[in-house]
Image 1 (tube, one colour):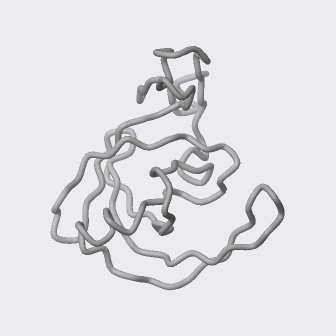
Image 2 (cartoon, rainbow, N blue to C red; image 1 turned 135 degrees about the vertical axis):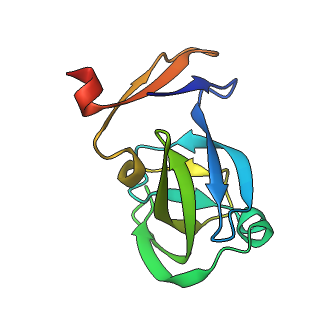
Length: 126
């Protein structure tokens, strides 16, 4: 089980540890975005600080229907106590956790400032 908190902007957040292939790590706070289908987005500043390797380009659709191109990088995230290799989309926003990272999990949000954000495997939920 993982836990986070609803911030003063009413965003559900979770802290994550991101690492590169040399095991250099960075602790980040990421906003959970159920409208984002990717795994995780990071701003260029964090990608450069961790020297993440570039793996290609991906396309996505924004909420307004427009298409955007993402630079994609490789990273490792500690997710539910396990190291997990995932693609990272570069985006100049706050870090975002998308539905691909949440896939197979139950997300519960107490939608008030300071509310608890709980992420459990579907097996934990029963």
